[in-house]
Each structure stands twice: as C-alpha cells, then as structure tokens.
Image 1: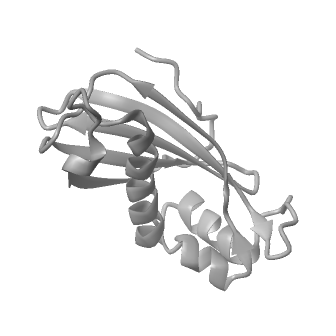
Image 2: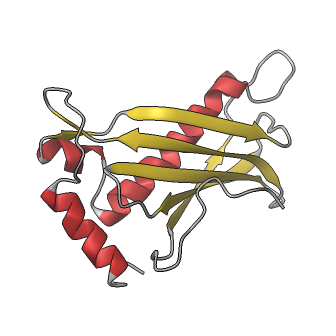
Length: 153
C-alpha cells in the first residue's frame, strides 16, 4: 500500500471522484511503443476537467468568477506502461482542503483494471491580476459548504 498523497483528517468530507475512459492514440506513444511519460499530464487534465465540470468548478467557472487556477505542482508515479490502442481509465479525485487550492489525485488503470500510473496536481487560486488568493472566493466557498454538508455525493 502506498502512502496517500493527501491524507484526510477527521471531519473532512469524503473526496469527490470522476472517472473518464480513453484509448491510447498513436501520437501518444514513443519509439518503444509505450505512452511517452509527458502525455500523462494530459490524461490527468482529462479527469480534472471532467470532475470540475461535473461539480461546477471547472476552469470556466473559476474564470467567470474572476479567478485563475494555475497548476502549482504535478507529480506522477509510473507503475506499468500503457500501449497503443489500449483502453484505460483515469480516475480524478478531489481532496478536501481548507486552503484556497485544489488538491487532485489521479489513478490510471489499464484495460484489465491494474494500476498503471498514480499522481497528483495542486492548483493555486489567483485573481485576474495574478495575485495569490489566500481565501477561497465566494463561489468556491459555497461549493465547499455544499460538499461538507454532503449535498454533492
């Protein structure tokens, strides 16, 4: 068992999850016939976008509220390769945070359900002048309240 990327604390609401399905395209593999490591950031993005749109906290939701959500960090652990034409899933998991940030974890599974890659991203929140927000904006605080109250399950 691996150490969790974002350990939960007592009182935290359960993480929110969304899984997307994909197939490895030819342009995504390297000369060895496996997915090039740099493509995994895009796979994480696919799940992050689907999760955000599902809960009303996608990129455009932030932007429409005057907020930018750039990546601060990204990390990937590669467990087994994916190959051309292989079907796989990417599970995006949003973990609770009191801070003005988004902590996403990702689990990529191959067509047989085996874990191929795990990783995470952290997004900070900024205003349109690129100033770091230390407090979550009102629309995101409302989302957090609904999440904590169990309305998003």
